[in-house]
Length: 417
Picture 1: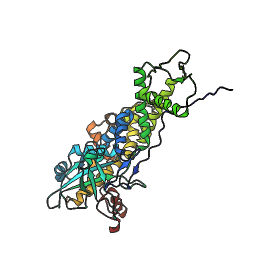
Picture 2: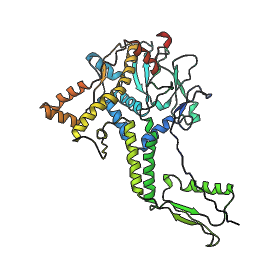
Picture 3: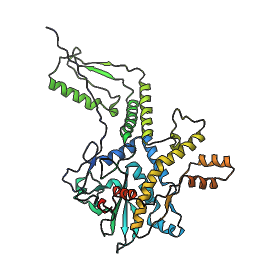
Picture 4: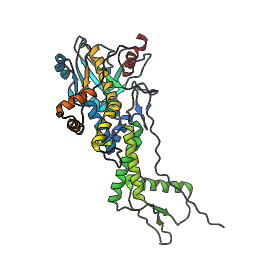
């Protein structure tokens, strides 16, 4: 009789492309948003920011450029009032949230008569959940909770009306971009690089654990005491997977206890050629995909050096890259924030103001331009900032612009247009 042999391949991990889902079928009054679980969207984005070096550098760099040197106005009489209405630190945090999460929010404070806005505070957007729509085309309120993963704290949630929907002293001005097939929340522009961010994090775990455990090679475990039943085989495979799979278990050793040497398991190492090159390729590819998702024209803008830059000098690269990046990436973010603020000021009793962000220009560009033109850096900075300044983002004369405000969660309904 032919001896029975059995061979199993254990697939340790399997990840799928993340799909963000707004769950409107729950029993809750609010709308959870998740990727792998019901309400883990913001947690996943935060983890990708905290664990990926490239992703963190891009998010922080872009957020700094969005904020620049702060919000200013040509109306000198309104300048001091603007600084009191919107504190600089709150605006900086909103700029950070809109880049990291794709959403941002102000807590709008009104006077007792509800005729004038007195303050716009930043509120962490991950603490807000939109109220479900019930026969209307606009979100009427947002629920605030410090930790949506804690069911006990959910009971302490606070309902805050959406901007322009009430006469209460406090409202939420929610800022979001248009997203097809998605109404309550929007996605960050780098969402397609979420998995690559986790890839970077797992590579760092892999290398750290390999170093700590002495670079034990990949191995095949053979049990030589017969072929167990399918259920027992599954149990053994599950135990091996739990103990040895994943980057956090890289380099761990195994202990086997046997009745005699004849039935001892054999462990055969499986050599992987050019393993260091494979790791390097994965690391470089993940970094490249993250940069593409963030629309980074030149990594040098954020202190990231890659193998090939494609320019004859760093100064030339940075000037060209900054001009493109400022126009194609930074200004759309700034316009999104400015449009929301301007709408709030108009409806909040302050009238239409010409607001814009004071741009933050890399020093190497200013010094190189000053050297070429023979002017001082301050003069060059004014000229460069003026050339890259936002156009009139407060103009709302066309019907298309007015209609677009309803996507941000403002007061106007489609039926009013």
